[in-house]
Image (cartoon, rainbow, N blue to C red):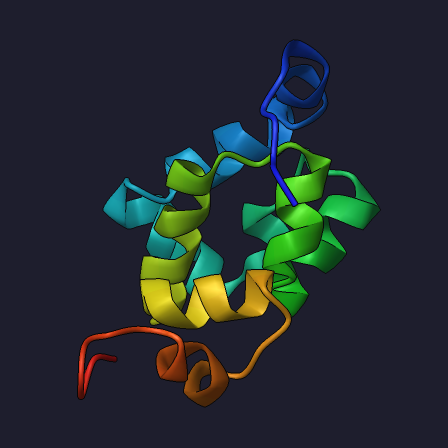
Length: 105
């Protein structure tokens, strides 16, 4: 399946992307980790649920940019391979079996 980040998806995800990109700021990351509800003020209830569940695919479908999703992944200690596995509906181990890099994590 291909993924097109078009103008409609971009507009729908703007609020979420702004929040995610804000996690590049140490104070905002700290607030998110200590008080997620306070940090996520301004997001819709649906967006909050996606973020809290780390539902990568739902956030992407909603309009989150992969590059902004990486900010959330870093804040929560999730590696790129773990995030990509979730996009594919696989466990990390299943995903790594498809890679040609022995021992990659």
